[in-house]
Amino acid sequence: MEMRDILERMGGSQGRGYASLGIKWVTVAVVVVVVGIGLITSIYTVPTDSAGVVKYFGRYSRTTEPGIHLKIPYWIETAVAVPVKKVQKEEFGYRTLEAGVDSRYLGIEELNTGRSRQDDLVKLIRDSGERASRGGARQLGEQAKEILRGEYIMLTGDLNITDVEWIVQYKIEDARSYLFNVREPGQTIRDASQAVMRQLVGNGSVDEAITIGRIEYESSAEEMIQKLLDEYETGIHVVTVKLQSSNPPQRVRPAFNEVNKAGQQKEQRINEAMKAYNEAIPKTRGEAKKLIESSKGYAAERVNRAEGDVAKFEKIYAEYRKAPEITKRRMYLETMAKLLPLIPEKWIIEQGGAEGGILMKLDLESGSQK
Image 1: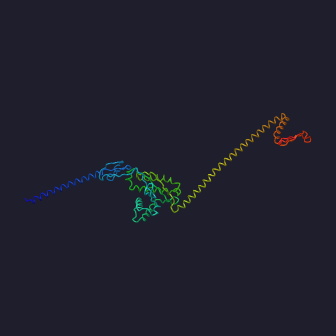
Image 2: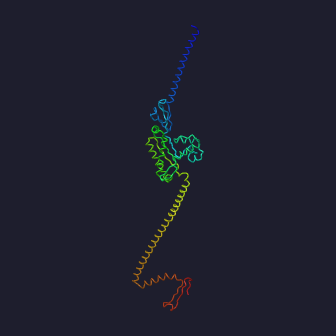
Image 3: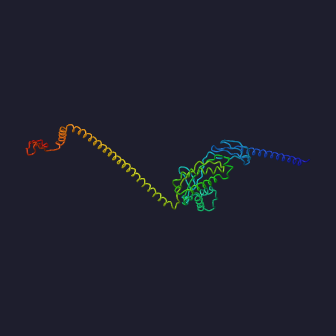
């Protein structure tokens, strides 16, 4: 055998050895990758404000608490974190772009200025369940306006139009029902909320929607929305429903404000009149009552005095009948004792009258005698 043949044979066996060694390394690498992926996909973490829902080939398997957990690797079991402790909200008639001290909102007034960012418009349109148009910012703004108008413009029971903006705050109570019973939970909440609010506003008057019925609408809407969501078995609990604003349409708002202003002035005048009435009438009634009581007291005094005079007279008359002359003289002297001090000038004459002669003239004012 020649040297050449020997070398060819040696080279062939070495190549086969290299090939087998490469296959082994590839196998080891595949195994390591498979094991690594299995380890990675078998561990999942649930945030503190959420509950973990584990699905086995897409079907519900179990619900886990916050923390680190294990599951069957790969895509045999998958885990979804559902924020059951977080209060979420849906807004109608406007959108909050940034919440905080300097909050930014996107409503019909901001859209009318034409300064809204295109990204905000696209987000509003997509969150509302519609597809954003491919036009520019102007077309997106018009589409956003139509969406908001469709949310806040409502017809009242007395055939008036009002603009109503409100929010619905909710929490997820049952993560399983939230994931498996409703395909679009957010859109379901929006549809149920709009149906309930339009029913309430449509059954009432414009004054109820704008002024006196706001609190009643909020409580009734909360109950009715919760009832609908329970019928759909969404696993959602409505925390609160809050009417942010309810006003007449923009075009008639100045006239409506003038009417309200006139009504307030009317109420003010009525209150002022009632105040004057409440001040004058009780005072007058008190004075009248005081006068009546004084009259009653005066009448009682006069009656008592008259009765006393009558009793006194009867006693005097009884004594007079016993001794007429003495009583007559005593009554004369008592009367003269009362009258003489009242007469400034007195004349003393004889018993026979003025013809008998004047004995003395007394001037009590000057204190002289003549």
